[in-house]
Image 1 (cartoon, rainbow, N blue to C red):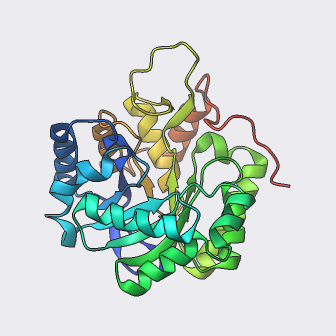
Image 2: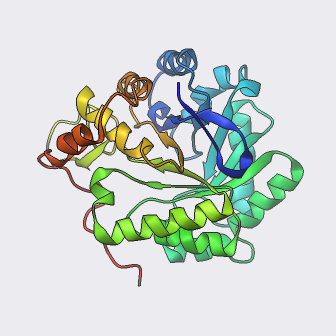
Image 3: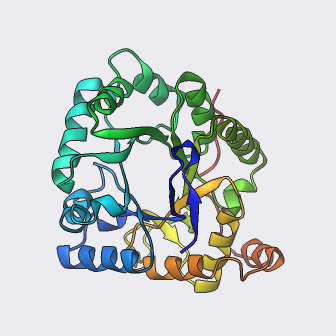
Amino acid sequence: MLKRTVGRLKRETSVLMFGAASLGQVTQEEADASIAFALAHGVDHFDTAASYGDAELRMGPTISRVRNDIFLATKTGQRTKKEAKEEIYRSLERMKVDSVDLLQLHAVGSMEELDRCTAKGGSLEAALEAQSEGIVKEIGITGHGHQAPAVHLEALRRFPFATILFPLNYYMYGLPDYREAVDALMEEANKQQTAIRVIKAIAKAPWIEGAERPYATWYEPFDQQEIIDACVHFVLSFPSVCGFASAGDVHLFPKIVDAVERYGTMSKEDMERILSGISGYTSVFGAPTSIA
């Protein structure tokens, strides 16, 4: 399993992050099997959130046992200090752990959300307090949608977040405005040694209304191995990307692991040929909108 350093944390972890959204609605047996598969293949970077259904509960039995061997990250979507602090403690209790390596302010994809998090009495204060108590080691920020890179660039101007997490895939990076925002964010993140982590690597498009949905993801994912290989090749071709989250369905996880284990065997030309020729490939977040 390929590993990269998580920014200024100076800690090497697997480039594949176990995206625990996949555990939100599965049985304990399914969760245990998926986590066991991840550990057996060298995945030691686990990323979850308080809002991922029962994910934290499902992680608890195994994660508490291997806590010292993994990098553990969770998220709070609350915006006030009081509510965020309560959610942080609840996450620790659900996972049966005493601390997390990373606590992220979740789904900060607009300037309005960023203002709420960084305002007096906002969730950033809860994260800082938790860090002073030793239950949170580092503080990060995540965001969805086309505005996320620009919002996170502003976030780094307000606070030295240790990590950022935002959408990146071949289609979205091909949008000129999005590419410009991502490039600017990556430049600043590299200056600050902020770890760059990404999501939606194998996202294809929004689900077609009325169509069968064979996966638990809220968007239609790619499920053909060759395309997943190309998607993984694309995101890992950015040297500053230290990790990407797996899709939110346990049945896709082995294919993503397989792609990472073979990273480097696909040429850039083959990657371009595969991804540029896909019909129906678009942004799962709809049409881009201005952040103004």
